[in-house]
Image 1: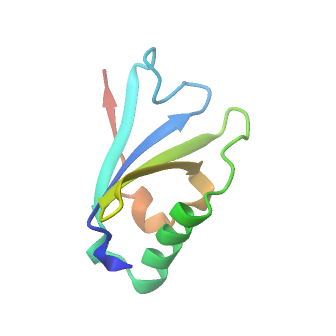
Image 2: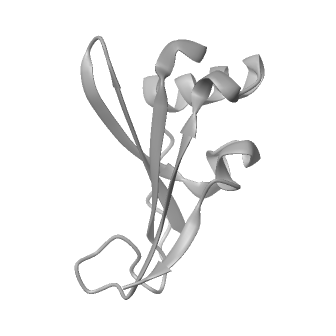
Amino acid sequence: MCGMGILHMERVGGVAGFGTSRARIRSHGQCDTAQLSGAEAEAVEQLFQAPASAATPDAFGLRLTRTGPQGTQSVVVPESAVPPALLRHLKDELL
């Protein structure tokens, strides 16, 4: 699990339309998965294996992207499904 490397994250959706071309705020970050606990790494792996639906209107989601032996993989999941240890790596940036 911890061999995933760097996990890139971007907050998407919400009322502000994060992650769209019209957004004026970008919320993004990255995390070295080697620093996660075993339970946190397993939770991240599960998000890639069976992503939860991010279809709740006006709710924030996170686009998670990793590169590994299978190539680059991205999923969009509800922010509520992401381990809190990852969320602390998000930083807001005005565009």
